[in-house]
Length: 237
Image 1: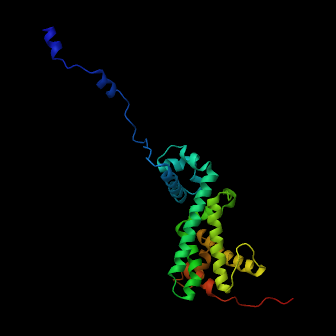
Image 2 (image 1 turned 180 degrees about the vertical axis):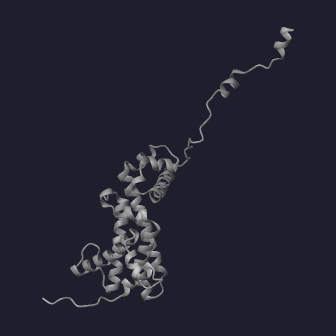
Image 3 (image 1 turned 30 degrees about the vertical axis):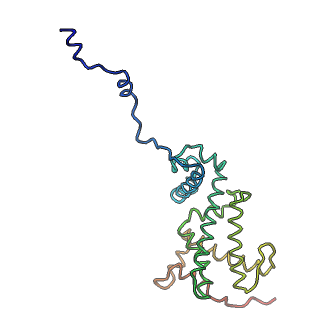
C-alpha cells in the first residue's frame, strides 16, 4: 500500500517549485520604453516639456525626465550631458515652436493691420499656452548658448523681430549691424510685448483690468496698446 500511495502522489517538479517561489513583480516598476536611438532623444525632450509644464522648473530634473519617458535614469545624461544641456535643448525646441507660431499667424493675416498685429499677438498667445517653455527661453543664466541648436533658434527669433520692425519702418534692417534708431525701435517693441506678457503671466494686470469697462479682455487691452498712438510731447531742453 505504501508503494501504491507513493505512486499516486503527484510529483513536484523542481522547475515549477522554483518558479512559484520567485517574488512577484511590483506594479510600481515601470517598463522601459523600447525607443530607437534617434527617437529616444526626441522622446526625452517631449517628456521634459511635460514635466516642465506640469511641475515647473524646480521639478525638472534628469531623473524626473527619465521617469516620465520610462527609460533608464542614465539616458538623459547620455544624450544631453547635464541639466544645463537638457534645458538648453528644450529652450531651442521652445524657440522653434515660438517662431513657427508667429510665422503661421503672419501668413494667415489678410490685411495690413492684421499683419501688424499678428506677430505680437502670437507672441503673447504662445506664452499663455506654454508658460513653462516661455519661462526657460529667457532664463539666460540656466542656458548654454554655445549649443548650436539653441543659438540658431534664438537668432532666428531675433531675425523675425528685426524683419517685422523693418517692414513697419519700410526699410531693410541688417541683423548684424543696427543704427541707433533701428536698435531703439526693436528694443521698444520687444520691451512692450515681453513686458506685457510677463505682467499677464504673473497676474500683475488684474488691478488695471478691474478698472476697465466691463467685458474688456487682456487681449483687447494689448491690442489697444499696439494701436494707440503715442500722445503728448517731450519736454523741451
